[in-house]
Length: 620
Figure 1: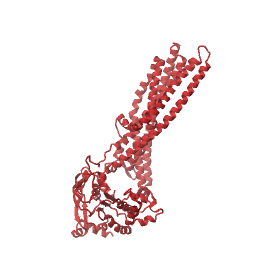
Figure 2: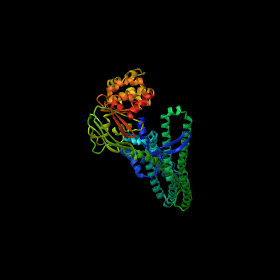
Figure 3: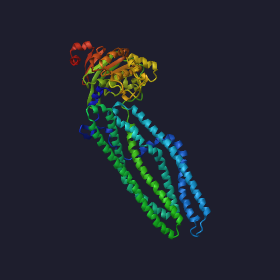
Figure 4: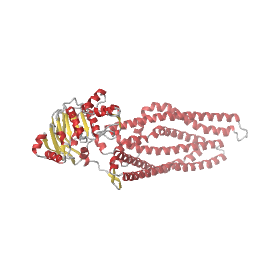
């Protein structure tokens, strides 16, 4: 996106609100980082768990069997222990049965081995399935983000988007790898223990279990606060990521203006704020553990007090009391884990809300249900009474009428913010017009499939983006199926071949992100090669030569003749010397066409264009 495009949108950006003031000025966050305040939505979790559905056949048979085996073996051990005390040790006669004791001990050992094997296999396979679910979720999120329109990214810093795909998805990993199965195990174990306790002794079982409703009544008071606390943690983390991305991208500006100290102070403020939010959330989380322990302590007191009474009454044996004690201990463990699991669900809820907030975003630019594929075009373009608003009530374009014949080169000139880049953004359907109609070869661009439209448009921007990879890969981005010979041919056509062959590994030279090892002019030459390889019917040069030195510009003028030949072309330029030979020059001012004609015609009119030419020559 060119500087012009950013200026065109400046008045229409979503209003941002400050989160802090530093010595260097005010910093901002975007609307999407506000705290999401909704009721706990179990429907959303059903949507989240739907990602496990494809693996249900793997999850239910093998993992279910392992889960049942582990639970049964765990619940059987206390019963065998009671048998050892009451039957093998024989406290009534004082004559222990060593044979029975050894058999029970051997049985307990076998049960522990079975439990260990079942748990090991369950964890192994659940980790595999959990990782696949995370992979699917992250892939779906990234795929959806790729489809979102420009206005979505206009309102959000890159770090805010990045944190959804990384941190928020990663925070669900524990839930899918262990949380779901542990939840099922604990629920089955709880039901099993309650049944066993009531079967052993109904009175004692009811006396111990009565403390559970009290515990849940108290714990519900913390749930809403804990969920909001974890939402705030996620929000603060997103803000840090956004600031980090901005700081890294703008490090040259920061150092050029010696603002490192101010930047560090501001980051330190955000970091401390995030730490406070984390401390608050974890403190609330930790409140669940002591709550369960205190409630469990009351249950234990009831157990031994009432259990001793029942032994005296002959309604309970010592062995059964020991078994009862063991079952009660096993009862409070899953209760404690369920409390922690609820906290984990709260953390996952905060992350899933942020993930599905993005997933529920609908692209503003999308194909109509009956959209047709745009056939191979000639390049006749009509702009009819085009009105456009980046923000309601603030018009960027005001009734633009323009006819372009196939093969013509149209130059768009005007002061910064006049609407030049807005026109080409609308032609590419990066945004949809507010009013009017844009037709290509008689097809309304809103009635054709976006992919079929953009595949026939090539764009070279002032700020050329170079991807990490080789020089060859960056040129091939214009047409992925292109051969090495075709890549080198287009590089020669735009005079890029010479500097490429002088690089350490030629076309196989690895370039860093954004191509920082290359000069601005070299990056622009690569973008010309990329556009020529794509062979578009409509070519857009958005300030494409603004950052190229005069010598390099002269070298690519001949290449431009090849590039523009036979194509309908739009050139957005501040350097007016580059557009003298355009078929038509369109002068824009505050979103309106003020002048239109060839270079010679506009010079004779002595109007705005002539004034721009004279102003540039005065500064040469």
